[in-house]
Image (cartoon, rainbow, N blue to C red; front, top):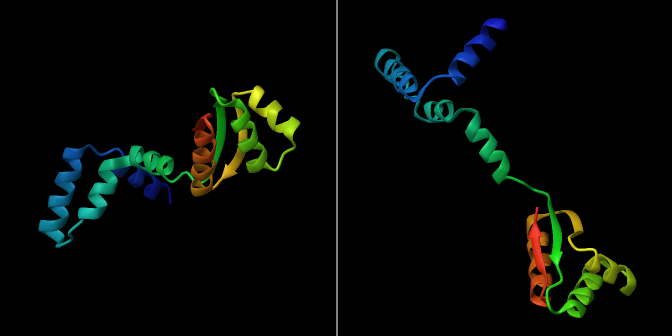
Length: 125
């Protein structure tokens, strides 16, 4: 098992030139076309981190500021969160504050759009 881990470590640390040489050897000597594997190995861990960032599934809607139409923003927060008027006002007055956490992308974008239409400055995290 340790040999396989060492081999995997070597594959991950190959340079682009070495990956191309490996692809040529596999194709010419063994008849294997490693196109997809070569791209994955050449991309290395950086591609994995980028893919993980792109696949974010949980978003927080953060109210950065109420803007000029504070009353409209308070009403929008009140409706979106099911809060009372005082709680919604306190949330808007305490900006920056998290309006909702752990939303799916569609829900988060919808809430952001609603709050922005009311005049708020909103950010998704």
